[in-house]
Image (cartoon, rainbow, N blue to C red; front, side, top):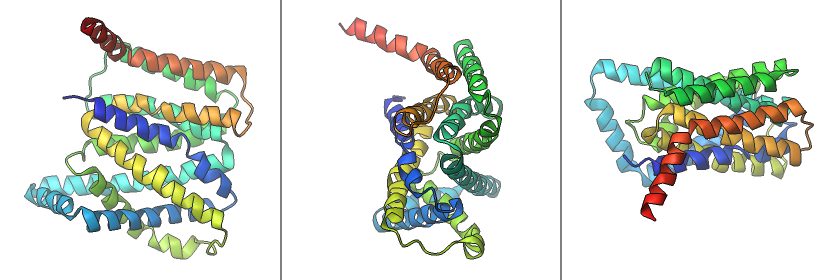
Length: 301
């Protein structure tokens, strides 16, 4: 199977997510729960309109597929869909807190730890094969993340929660790849939207009146939710979770450069060394693909 389109989808998704701070930072003074509520319910609105208005045949196809399965298989899939929905919302909420109340670098650290956890979980839960080269890359990544956690233990705790949540979500999505990516995303967000309704009535603040809030929410919904989530789910149909896990590094690398050059956050020499090791890990992990593509180009010449 040609994996290029799936790899490209993952690259675009994680590159977009690297700029998430552009949507969150301007509204950092708003409660994190309020940002989550607006992100969730506006995303659900757009997804329902798109699917019901233009993709009803895809919905019917997935529903017919679901009905054709055994009861045991149906129950397992429902558990995975609901569980994935709750895990995703946990990831969203804590990531908003980290980005707006801790630092952009802490948010970046989340997705530095995430690929390590994703790779190991894929090996343990999905029995995905990892070569010695990939294990070396994982080891280098672990060393890099340990370096980056020095002096930032609290940040690491937040980062670990975000990382574990997203890693579990990726693993679950691999088990749900029989369904259309857009339908699956809509279903998961609909489920959690229903589950969170009581929280909205209990904890939602006053309706925001500033235009910038709604501008940022729309940016978050379109550029940092619907498009990259769809691309991420699509990518998981064609490439294994460990490869997706390594591509996640695009997100924190972009975050890191924004933290330093755009937001002016201080960075130590230790942190610079940690990010340098991450870049080495990415190259090592993908070395087989890189050298293979080079040899193909030479043979073509």
